[in-house]
Amino acid sequence: MNYTVTGATGHLGRIVVQDMLKMVGAESLRAAVHTPAKAAALRQQGIATVKADYLDVPTMVDALQGTDVLIYIPSKTYDVLQRVTEFENTLTAMKAANVSQIVFVSFYADQEDNPFTMSPYYAYAPRRLAGSGLQYAVVKNALYADPLVPYLPELIERQALIYPVGDAAMSFIAQNDSAEAIATVAVKPELRGAGQVYTVTQNEAYTMPRLGEVMTAVTGRTIGYQPVSVAEFGRIYAAEGDGDELGSMYAGGAKGELGLMTDDFKTITGRNPEDMTHFLKTRYQR
Image 1 (cartoon, rainbow, N blue to C red):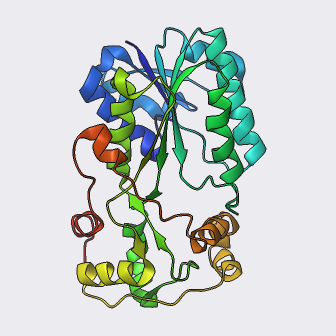
Image 2 (image 1 turned 45 degrees about the vertical axis):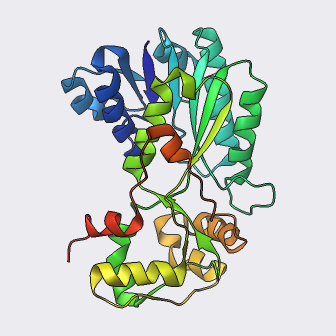
């Protein structure tokens, strides 16, 4: 079997590629990247790299030649129409390149009444796959725990989490665990190909006071909870370019739509996901 991973130089894609490398070897693996110059490290590992531009169908067709299973990691744009166009182009390219199997990497904020900017895209994609005639599986991620680590110094300074989610709980997953689940689904035929939908989460969802308690124990510094409004959250992080979009995501969180927990990670991998306390303890440096 030959596997192609898109977004292979991104934060998640890099980890998926390394897991796939361990599972199937470099000879069965191809990394599809937007900028091949950034993929030198992958080539040094013997992994073939190909240029893939989601907005250019011919390059996608070339990138997918000889692929048995595509692991599709979407781009990071918050433009819903562009995301849909990118995916439609990929489906067109898959048909032209005779690729019949796909593992689609998704996100769990896809409810019909979720105000998150990207919710329409995440709701559309599995329905589109259901009518595509492809053999597919969908892996939905919970919130990534990883950004919490570089966020800790700011939280220590504020002495509080400020997410505008009220009393609602949110669930998380470490990127390493997400990548392992995605790679495992890709390489095990019994886990993919029949429209399976997985949601990978840790085994506990956290209210913000509870998450603050965990962070306090890990850092030795008091971190409470003083939520701001969705609008204020957007203003605070506007300079980073995604304040409004993140605010819309946490507005969904306030409705309880980011608190889903499942056993899907263990179903896929046979083990429990890394819990939040261990995750933060092993990564936070005082």
